[in-house]
Image: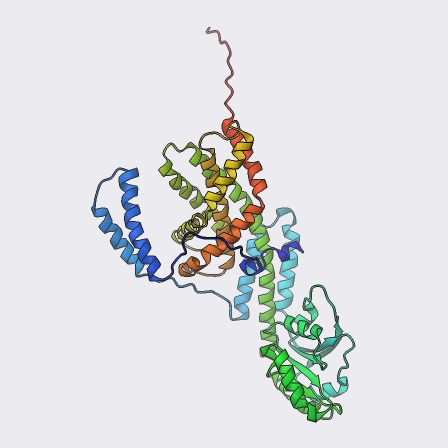
Length: 468
């Protein structure tokens, strides 16, 4: 159950805390222009101050490279399958990812179950399935009359279900109803809250109608007006009215009968819908496994960064050490998320998220928090440069987590939309920073162990060896 709840609706389901940023990221050509000027200054500083290579011509070289980048556009093409074969291919890709990420001891059993589930959907065939559904206690139209009204040249599997509870904790649409080709929801008037909640659970791509019983023709116009004001928009042109006599049932169910005239198309659409849902479920399970793998990569990288910053004799090289370590981290993350983006794109994303984290005061906040702990634990715990090293480690945690969130959100995108990233970066970082703050105690425990290791002097053993 936990797997299905973890990261199923990423940023949308997480309340994003409001963090004051020192600046916002402009989008479009304004941002590119600013980065163009910044790249000229930064490139000149890196090569003259750090590498000590003189040359005013470097600015012109940076200008030319900046103009080339400035003229490029970023377009993300989401490769959402539009056919059954396309979804089968995506599901098979997910199966391969399970092989790499799942627990080897249990992966074979789980893999067999997943393969069987996929096989059942792919081999699903006729007859068409249509269900009349409603909540407990609802009076359904006569079954024989319904069969006569929708009968035709094609075989039909007609079922009845009046078992939807009036109260439910999860309000999850039952699997047996999700697998139906068509649904007719029998809706008594006046509309109840339970019916409205169940109607909202019916998938948008599952062809459905609402069947309303209205005994008084004179009142129907007003009843229909009230009903349309209460129902979601998708139902407004899918309302069927049945009077008490039920004599005109064939006429009332004409839209249903017409829809049943294309069995191959209908079954194929249902198969595609089921495959899409299966793929979504598997992606939730994969995301759980990816997060577990990512946790070890995150922990390893943060202390590599901390060690590089701690040992760095020149403060200006700390950022370079952080960039190198994060470069290694994002490559491992790309493997975990089966991401085919270019390494250059991954570096741009990491840099953008790092800038957003710094702008929102992640380093400043962690430095203040570490400084207060330093006072409590004394100098034996906090060596010179430790605060800077641990702040860099914490920044790595936040950037890594926001990077993982972005990869999860863009699963299936051939190339990332860098313009959209600029808009989403502050939110992604805010969510990641808030989640990491919740685990601040765990980070401090790790930090103590790491600092103790840095402060431990190596043992020197002495012995006397007699030369022969």
